[in-house]
Length: 575
Ligand SMILES: *[C@@H]1O[C@H](CO)[C@@H](O)[C@H](O)[C@H]1NC(C)=O
Ligand SMILES: *[C@@H]1O[C@H](CO)[C@@H](O)[C@H](O)[C@H]1NC(C)=O
Ligand SMILES: *[C@@H]1O[C@H](CO)[C@@H](O)[C@H](O)[C@H]1NC(C)=O
Ligand SMILES: *[C@@H]1O[C@H](CO)[C@@H](O)[C@H](O)[C@H]1NC(C)=O
Ligand SMILES: *[C@@H]1O[C@H](CO)[C@@H](O)[C@H](O)[C@H]1NC(C)=O
Ligand SMILES: *[C@@H]1O[C@H](CO)[C@@H](O)[C@H](O)[C@H]1NC(C)=O
Image 1 (cartoon, rainbow, N blue to C red):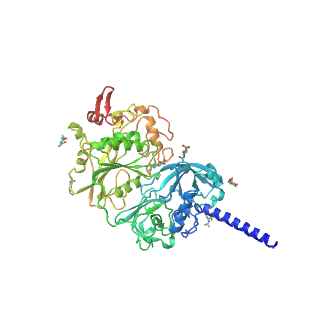
Image 2: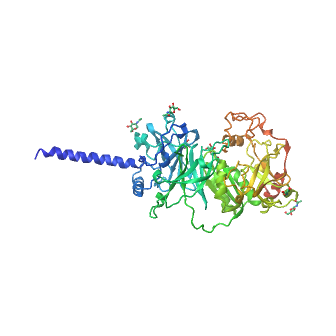
Image 3: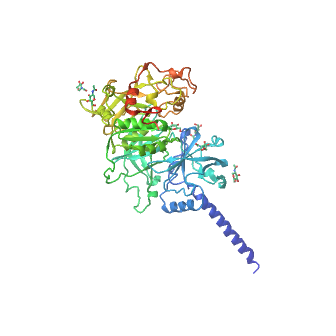
C-alpha cells in the first residue's frame, strides 16, 4: 500500500500541528481573556474613557474555566491573570485576585510587566488590598509604550522572555481618574468609591443620573438605584442576590461580583476594580469591644513620626488608630509591630493605594469603623491636640482628657467638635529633631489656621461628604461645635526642618489640592508663603513662620513624657 503512506504521514503531521496549536492556545488562555459579553457602547469620548473592556476583565462566572486556568497558572510558570490600572506618573498598578495563586518559593518577588513591543519593567510588590484581598504590584509603563494609544494592560509574568508579541490582544487599561475603585457594604446599603464622575470643584451630579451595576456579565447584571452622589462617594441599594443567579455551589472565586456605576445618559459603565460583598445576614456580635474614641489618618512614609503621635494620643484618650497607608515604603510596618509589642496600642493599617483620595479614605473610615468606634478623630501625624487647661492644672495625661472635650455642654447633641490649628515653623531646626516634633518646634505663626475635627460617627450625613477638616452632619439633628482656643488647640508642625518639609510637600495627598509644582491657585492657603513652584529652600527657611514662641505643649510633654538619663533628657518615644 505505498499510496497510503503519504496520507498517514500527512495525518500524523496534521495531528502534531493541531497539538502544537492547542498547546499554544492553552498557554495563552491564561491571558487572552476572551472578550466577554459585557460590551460597552462604542464611544468617542475623552481620552480617559478609552478602556472599554476592562470592566469585565478579571472574573468570569464559569467555574470550569476558572479552575482550568488556575491549574494552568500553577503548573506552567506562565503569566498570572491580572488586571491593571494606569496611575499618575506612568505607574501601572497590577491587581491579582486573591483566588489566583502566586505559587513559587519566590513569594511575590521576581515579577515583570510585559508590554506590547516586547517592553518589560519590573513589577514590584506593593501590598494586599484589605477588602478584596487582591495582591498589588506596581510597574512603570515603558517609554516606548507611552505613545501607543490606547494603552494595553501588561502581562504579569516571571518569564517575560517567554512571552511573544501576541499581547496586542490584551484589553485596554483603565485610568485611575475614571474608575470605580473600592466598595463597602453596610447593613442597609452599598458605598461605592468612584473617581472621575463628579468633578473636583464640588459639582456633584444628582443620584438619579446613575445606577449601580452588579455582576460580571452585562446580560445578567443587576442594577440598583443610587441614593447619594457626592465627590467620589456613591451609595446605592443592595442588589437582590437571587437575581444575580449565583448558585450556592459556586466557589468563593466565582462569587466575586464586580460592581460599578452606570452613567444613565451615556449608557456608560465606569471601569471598575471594585467588588461587592453581600451584607452579612446575622451581624456577628462584635468581637472587639467598641472603642469610644478612634483616630483615622492617611499616611505615607511617616514611620519616623508615628511613635510620638501614637504614644501621645494614646495617653490622652485615643483607644484605636486606623492608618490608611498609601503604599508606604519606609519602616511603617515594623514601627507598628514594635508599638504593638511594647504597649497596649491598637493600631490597624489599611493599605489604601488609590492616589489623591484623602477625602474618600475619610468617608470610607466613617462607614468602615462605625461598628467599632463611637467618635473618630481626623488629624494628621503632625498635628497634636491639647487643652490649655491640662497644662495650667499640671495634671498628668489621662485617658479622659480628649473625651472631656467631646462632652462640653451644649443644647442639642454634639455631632462634631472642631479644633483650631496653630501652624508651627521650622523653629531654627535644620533636620528632624531627635526628641520628636513637640520638643523640636516651638515657634509658630500668630493667627490660627483652619481646624480639624472629631466626628460622632452616628451623626455623619448619608453622603459621607467631608472636606478633610470636617464632615457634613445629618440634617439638623446634630450640632457642630467649634471649640475656642482656650478650650483646645492643635499644634500643627507644618513647616518642619527643610529636608522634612520638602519630602512632604512633594506628595500632596488631598484630591482637591494642586500639585505644589503646578502653577495654579498660587494664592491658595494650601500653598506655602515664600515657597514658589520649585523644591528649592527659600532664604532663611529656618526662621520663617515664627511670630510667637509657644512652649506650652513642649513643657508639658517634657514633664510627663520625658525622663532624665545619663545622656540627658529622653522622651518616651525615643528608642
Ligand atoms: C471622534 O472624535 C474626534 C476628535 O474629537 C472627531 O474628530 C471624530 O469625528 C469623532 N468621531 C466620531 C465617530 O464621532
Ligand atoms: C518580540 O519578541 C518575539 C520573540 O522573541 C519576536 O518574534 C518579535 O519579533 C518581537 N517583537 C518586536 C516588536 O520586537
Ligand atoms: C521597582 O523596583 C526597582 C528596583 O528597586 C526600581 O528601580 C523601580 O523604579 C521600581 N518600580 C516602580 C514602579 O516603583
Ligand atoms: C499616594 O502616593 C502617590 C505617590 O505614590 C501620590 O501621587 C498620591 O497623591 C498619594 N495619595 C494619597 C491619598 O496619599
Ligand atoms: C484641673 O483638672 C481637674 C481634673 O483633671 C478638673 O476637674 C479641673 O477643672 C481642672 N482645673 C482647671 C483650672 O482647669
Ligand atoms: C441654646 O439654644 C438657644 C436657642 O436655640 C441659644 O440661644 C443658645 O445660645 C444655645 N446655647 C448653647 C450653649 O449652645
